[in-house]
Length: 299
Image (cartoon, rainbow, N blue to C red; front, side, top):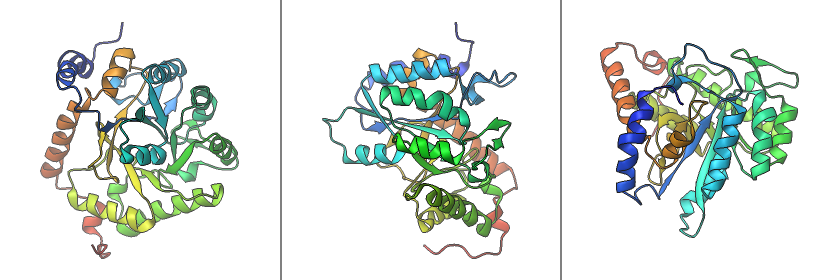
């Protein structure tokens, strides 16, 4: 029996019935699933809502559910291209993403993706991806050899910055460097353009000035799209550089997983964004851009 969690209770018993009553509303929305580590790490003393590890067994169940539900599962760029075309004859679409470039993507996730003929995008913090094994957050990361082998299986790779910093705290030159240098490194290693980006840590959506500069910098650096930690399904009219995702971990049992796919978890966006707005307006702290003398990027 799943441990009690309020978000699960409200999702399954209140918002899922409402989604069913409004059937068809989410047919033009794209679920972008956000995974991190595929491992049996217990993550003790962490609320299920904040956990980032998904056990290999649970991950395999998630992939089996996607297959059984008739989803075509792609990486971010391929998924967005197909989603934007909007052919109603296409199968249901879902996108899978992995942040942080952990080795367990290669050992635990990739075999399951291959078995199901699914695509995915892995976002790499390039300071921790080497020709020899490196660690990040106490976990082993991918090597460039493993990245290239996964690429041959159709896996897409995007940028997750160089050092995985809190971009909100950086000045403009350092922000640009994190976006540009990570992109260049991956392109040099893989011989293909890198067009997608994943924002590390909680996305500061309440600070509109910062988000504007971030998006302009992503465009200037050559990216086509970006994903965040904002919760929900992606819509066709959404900003391609601040796309919502659905967080996944071992606490996502079958019922909650299917409810997330159906859009019933999107209600959490309201308290999430409300909390960010309240924190932003109460706290005197602003982004590193606000106190930096570097000129803003022209519109």
